[in-house]
Image (cartoon, rainbow, N blue to C red):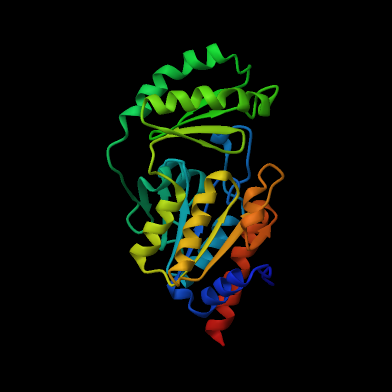
Length: 281
């Protein structure tokens, strides 16, 4: 299976480093929109049918695979179907933007105490949404260490999204939280929790010799920035965009753009095959 050619020199160097020394490579992946198609109800999100087989083929050949997500790690593991799969022993889920970690080797989740501002925001949100008159169909997802307000089901999703940005930012600020915008979702969460911090810390923890990161949404920009930081420190990296029509910022920053989760699965399969061929050769 052929691999897409990176459009940048840094991307080409990142891909070559990964293929040359796969045992030192970290493969980082967002979940929603990257491994799992975006759906109207996030509770119905499931990994692409080819994702687990592709990961199980690739993971034994690299240093680690890290799923970096705003979801609770247990939820991502359940929706992804990652538990108890042969070949995924080197997979970790960095959930809640790295605040919690699930390790496939142990099946356990490690986590610190939650930020008190999340509970305070959760109590005030119903009244705020009613006052903002954001429209029927706007709804709240309680994520444990964060709270997300979704507008995808509203009659005017983008209008509801824009209406809520300022009041939600004010609410978050009063309780020591920040707002992370995404694809028709505004997430209120503690500062210092982002995919870039999670990816950078984990890459340094395992001594990664190269890093690939694939994402689809605004929250993945910090992970792209982390890869840029690693590149500046001498660690080659490859930036992959799981393309969509909703977010263009990642497409403009990426070394490689693939067609959504289907394209990501194809990339993972291609990497596993190419590495396997090199190891056998």
